[in-house]
Length: 268
Image 1 (cartoon, rainbow, N blue to C red):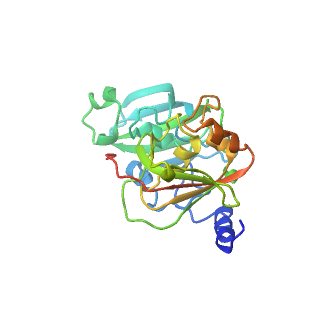
Image 2 (spheres, rainbow, N blue to C red):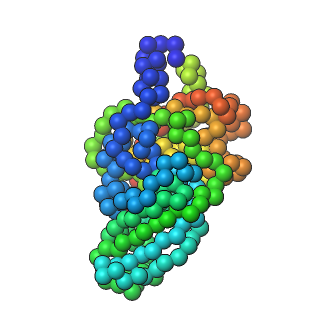
Image 3 (cartoon, helix red, strand yellow):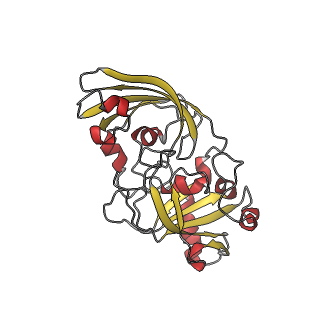
């Protein structure tokens, strides 16, 4: 950064900022909605393994084992399942409770009936809420996160709104710059916003990672290495030009700005 403003921005981004969430972005982002998802599902970490593989994020393929019981502790479903987080293109409760977990960790949550997406359960019970226990057995995707290589910063505290969750549809502008301020990508110059579901592999995984739990207002700035502009599968093409991808060097830091969010129809 050449200017004083740029140097201060870089300082803010490099050093961890205030955190209020225990989810995937907990160690490096300022959450301005006090982790609404934690309150919706009353999430509790039963087993934490900080050094284990992870954390899981939207777009990754994971293997989990889970057990669902009703208010009377009747078991309705117990199985092992491999799924891509966000693949349903809606705010699936199991997907979003799994986001942020590391391999071997156990997490429990209470799912209100309106958020229970499994018909096999809701068709058999009139319970108002269900208890789920999830164990993350494996993360199948190739691209993993090193959290010291990503820093996330919000420009303002915004009014209460429903945040983006894994599977939600998001419409926004994006700008990518080098640390010297050189802009190498800007959707506003093309008047073409990005439209994607969080977890969609057609776009760089850093988009889904950075937007998870973000209220769609204000601006989110991300300091990240070029390697995170690939998708979680590491080998499939993404919707960025080949010329741009060639500029995003794997181990070089870049600044990603996400802004001009468009209100959508996400209600969960």
